[in-house]
Image (cartoon, rainbow, N blue to C red; front, top):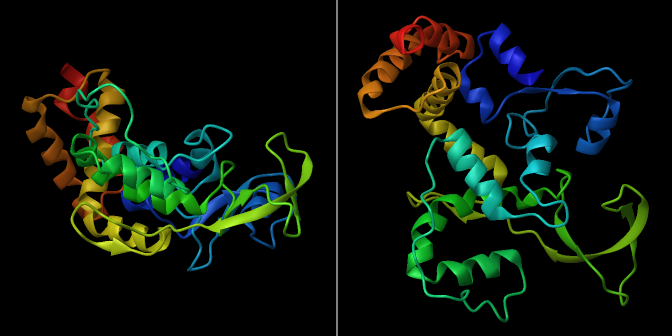
Length: 261
């Protein structure tokens, strides 16, 4: 429904990263902590200016499939953002000596990742994909907002919650979530809101990647070096509409790549 709205209204491709609306029903709104939505049918809902739920990468559906059902993975979520949203291909891991980096003593997932990145052969790719994944640590495995991790600690009072099986259970709070990071270009952010703002600076790259993905889907073929000029021409043709999603689709279906490849 979200993507269909982008198409119907020819909304700018930047809405993939952040938008001032989403689609909710009462149950999903409750999951998001958004009040004033009643009933089962899904409907378009305007979001508050400071809401984290605009766009695709903070929808619970995406956050759920980029976790393993038990724990969150900044690497999985980071790769999803860098590849699906920004269009940067993650190369295969380089050949490294047998065995894993020594992460003994690492308590949090951030500490484990930093220990892993200490290996120069691992650091190159992780410098790009880890930061957005760490920003998304503010969301648990089901895409609900969290400020702290959960743990088992019988020495502190328990809090009511919902287990992985959907049943009510009690849990204990652990360490606070640290969603800050540094992008590969050196820009630093404190949370997912600031990350989104930084990604939106390059709206053209967001639109370019969406156009490439649409072209691959439409033609069933990868984008080759000789296709780059056609992609850039189509992208430029949609600039007046702020790279509207429907305009991008129209460019694809009218292109030689689609009609003659």
